[in-house]
Length: 298
Length: 133
Ligand SMILES: Nc1nc2c(ncn2[C@@H]2O[C@H](COP(=O)(O)OP(=O)(O)OP(=O)(O)O)[C@@H](O)[C@H]2O)c(=O)[nH]1
Ligand SMILES: [Mg+2]
View: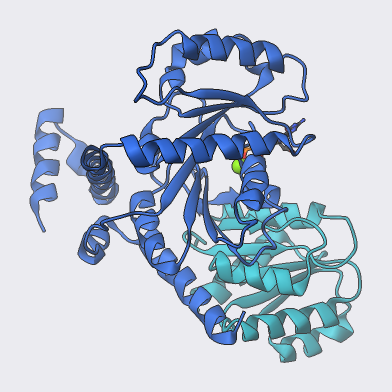
């Protein structure tokens, strides 16, 4: 890479930080025009330690094989007490972290509790201008159903484990209705086939018309790297299906809806944080009114 | 004082395979409010500089026990310069003989923290150093 290009990389990196760190007011001030087309986005979610980062590493090394460029945004939780974080996803991405065609940015969840981070929507938006071919988003490890990632990406992959026990747990939490691709990872461990069959059965109980996407269920293991070929193929199939079937306008609507909701949630938190304690002495109704007034001040 | 909002890369260059010290400092920084990225073992200066730029960190802490700290530090500083990122601060920790301190500081290191220092003192110094940034 030439020196000029590298300087660009630093500038891009700093621009991303500015977006990630912006307050709600700053975010709204700096937002650009809505993009007509967005980069293809893959979202990977699943329980803590299920292998999301490891999968991304194996997957992305295949996807940039042809010289294309990928950006990875990996979110880890912030400590609610100290606000600090250990951003440890990159460590599991050894197969690609050395590849100049792969850009990895680790970010803390900060005030968000939905598996994403503050300003994730705007950060993905900012990624548009830098010659990436696609973006991969790793959520915080979530136990319960967290749907937010659904609103921001094109293809959702949910990672499950053999030791998730029986599939009832997964059914209860509702996560079996939100993903496009289900991956049973660590399929080198006992119990993988059983859970794959169970999940498959649950997913197949629905009938899908010919123009609907029928979610697929796959097994992966970092002990058999070929298993990621199947995942890669499934992603490409889903992408192709989307191109001819998705309603762009309704998708844009849900993205904007999510973005507005998360800005609003955060604005409320920002205001609550700076509200003097004595303002909470009183009836919830009065405090609510006070907060509403503050929200309206520009 | 707090390191809230500061991004710090803890890197482990060199050939030794002991990263307990690196992990302890990473956790202490996290508890002081920092967002801490850890590279894992045996990384080259070239790799460390690239990650520092991609992750847009405020500082890099190099944890070293192997004795080749002088070469590693000057190479890391050089690589950062090539990437137009000389403003990213470098801290050094581990077993660094007293005789080498002056040379490292002259080369551009912002702080040297040897294993005998109390971790609270290390945090204080890093906070001061990054606050002035
Ligand atoms: N046996 C086995 N272990 C795996 C496999 N994939 C990942 N692991 C291990 O599982 C652990 C967690 O992997 P990660 O990739 O960090 O999981 P994650 O979902 O990104 O974790 P969080 O980001 O912390 O939620 C690591 O120790 C991996 O080495 C696999 O296919 N088989
Ligand atoms: Mg991870």
